[in-house]
Image (cartoon, rainbow, N blue to C red; front, side, top):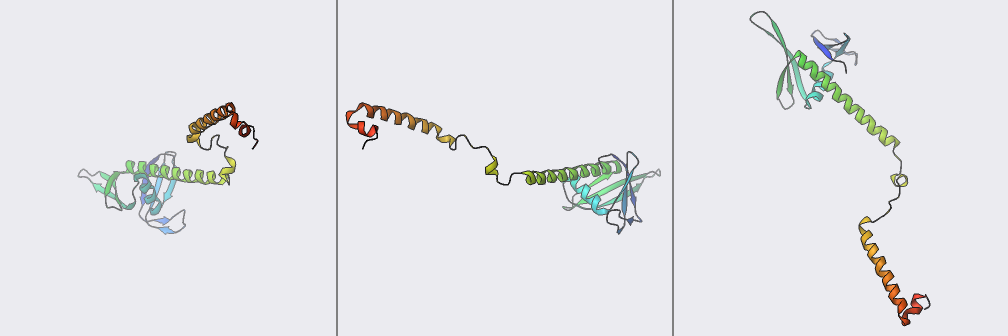
Length: 171
């Protein structure tokens, strides 16, 4: 449904849901910009609208208003699970259905990418990561100071006559 929806038709008599092959009443026909038609049942319509609004749809209905001059206005009333509602024109509903479908695809592709990342990730991450150059980077300064003091102590010990056997390793 990445193509733009130009018209929505509610079939009140219903028919066979093409996905589940079960009879459903009503069904909705979505007409796309290239004049292809896709038939959706109530669960799919509610799913796409829920994704578009990021709120769970409780129910939705088509309302037709007859004006005094004889014109008809089609409006779609969407009621959410928190009982807030919104009233849309047919063109706005088509845009929301398209947005909901896009969000559903994004979620599907994101979960697919995550599963592929897990599949191709190394079994033991410790074996496949380069070794750290300094295991304790916060101790580098202390290590340098200790090395400097150790060299100073060795130099002082070499200068003293009584410590020559220790410095040379003769005990």
